[in-house]
Length: 121
Image 1 (cartoon, rainbow, N blue to C red):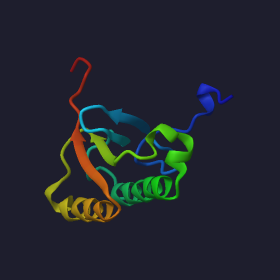
Image 2 (cartoon, rainbow, N blue to C red):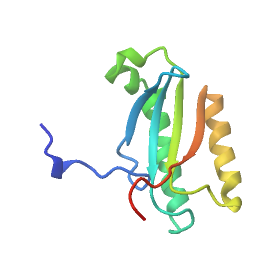
Image 3 (cartoon, helix red, strand yellow):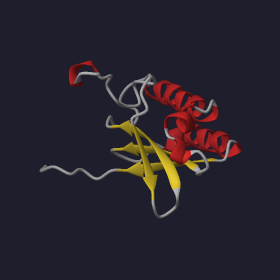
Image 4 (cartoon, one colour):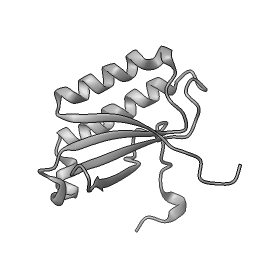
């Protein structure tokens, strides 16, 4: 059994971990969430990390690991969702469009969801 202190850290910076898998009852999609708490553009390697995470998620789905681990999701549509603190910067939009277009070829929907802070200011 994995101890809490041995778990790998979640987030865009770690492509070895699927941050969250959930099901959207409204759309019927299986949602693979990528968590990004850093502001966009805060680190020069951020988009490269996101690309690595995206490619890791693609492999997880297309190579059959998702449906092997979660057979109940085998025939459901897939959505990749980036949960982030703010909208991507305008200069990064072509990067996000390219990722979305690439995912669409594989019948995977890609969305960016800006999360509102939940704690006190």
